[in-house]
Image (cartoon, rainbow, N blue to C red):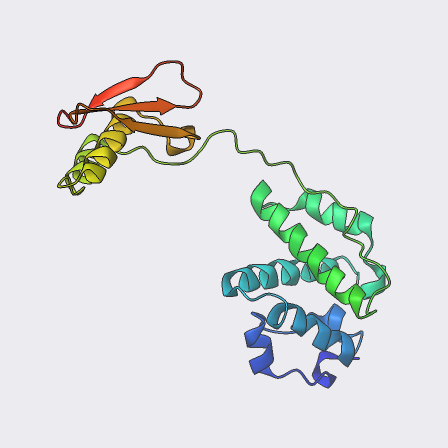
Length: 208
């Protein structure tokens, strides 16, 4: 069945983030075409994710067509694995594209468009982030942040002292897994106990 015989309007295609229906899907018939559209419009609510997945799936089917794979039933795990291995994108992009293909076929399986998901056994590239990308505040930015804190109350003084300590020793927020703050009788100082550290730091509220 040609794409021109599948009654999918341009409006529905646009809502799905598609310019046209992949020929591989259109050949299966109207039921498959509508299920394909529903995957994007009814199953994926985030517009950015929908657009990214539409681009990933469109690229995959175009790759299949270029290699003479015109029928949906001829798409198998080895073919998808070959596509993933030659994908020129970065590891995160390749993993996203594989996720889009896998989720699409899962969706098609539930309505018996295909008997099984050929992407379920395909593994993507490993991608491990070993270094965080959280930017460190510069000195002037830290000073601006500290000056913005209201110190007319003990709570503001406490917050300013804690943030000042963090800025001075350049410790990321994630380090403070457990922080217990004890305000002593002397209102000029607070004691900060940081989980994982053996030393207790006493910080002057008025010195920061």
